[in-house]
Image (cartoon, rainbow, N blue to C red):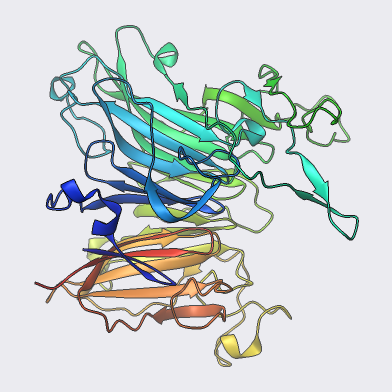
Length: 470
C-alpha cells in the first residue's frame, strides 16, 4: 500500500520503524489530518502517529522547528491507552486516546452498554497554538512575537527551535452524568474551532450523546452559546515588550440589549442542539459547522456570508463535508423514484470552481473554465455537482480541503475506482499537472500501478492511499 501526495510519492512502509515493517496492520493508514502547514498520519497500530511540516507553534510533538519528512510523534499517553483518532486545526493538533480494554474499533455509537468492557473514558491530547482558545484549556495565547520587514511591515517570526510542545490532556468526565463513561465518536475541526460527538455509556441507562465544542465562535459556528461564558486567562506574551493582550470582542450592535456571542470559548462546552435525533456526522468549515442527524436532517451553525449554510434541507442526506466556505451533501433519492442511487449537492463560495458546476458570473473566474452553454449559477443554489451518473458507480468517499474537493467512486461491477477532483488548484493540489482552477469535476488520469482506496484533502494538499496490485 502506498501513500501519495499531489507532488511526490511516499511509501507508507517508509513511515514505519523497520522492526514493524512486516506487520501488515501497521501499514494500514487509518486517517490523515492536516493543518495550515503540518500533517499527521495515523496507522492502525498502537500509538503509531507520524507528523511532518511546520512546528513553529509546537503543533508537532517532535524535536525540530519543522521537518520535511515524516517523524514519529512523541505522545504522553496514559498507561493502557492508545491513539484511535487524530485531527488538526490551523496550528493545533488533537489526538484521541482510548483505553485498550474498550472492545470497539469504529467511531459509531455502541448499541449496548454491555459491548464496552471498561470504566475508562476517552481522553484528548491537544497541542500547539492556543489562538481563540483552540486547546480547550481555559486560556488563550497572546500574539506571537513579530519582527519588522525591510518595508516596515510586520510578520510573524519563526523561531530556530520550536517552543516546548506542552501536551494538554483533556478529560470530559466532569460533563457526564454520574457513573458514566464516554467515547469520542467523531471530531471535526475548523480553522480555530473544534466540535466533537461524545458517546455516553452507563450500565443502567441506554447510550446517549453530548455535542461538545470550543474555540472561535464569533460567527456562531458553535451554535447559540451564552455570552456569559467565563473570561479566559491569558498565557504570557512571547515578548516582554508587548503590551498586555486583550481578546477582541464582536462589534457592538445598534441594539446594546441584544445578547452577543463571545469571540471564543476556551474550554469544552456542551453545545445546544435542538434536534433530538442523534448526531452521526459533524463537518466544520472556516466559520460554519454542519451536524448531520441519524434521521437525515441537518443542524447548521455559523456564518452564511458566502451562502455556505443550506437553507433548504433535502431529504435522505447520508454524508456531509465542508470546505472553508462551502457545504457538500451526499443524498440518496427515495427508492420508489428510481434513477441514480446518489447525488452530491453543493452550496457556498464557487469563485474557484469549488461548487463543481458552471462558473459564477464573476470577473475573477476564467472564462475558459466553464462551458459556454452552461447557465451561470448563484452560489446560494443548493444544486447537484456536475458528475457522471451511472448505476454501476457508487460513492466510496467525499473529501473537502480548504477550497477544493475530491470524490472517490467505485465500480460495483469490477471494483475499480475513479477519482474526480475540482476547485482551487493554485498549488497543484488536484494532481492534474497544472495549477489552473477546475470548475467542473475532472477525472484524475490514473496510470500508476494499483488502485486508489482512500483519500484526504487538506489546506492546498491532497493525499491518496493506493493499494498495490499483487
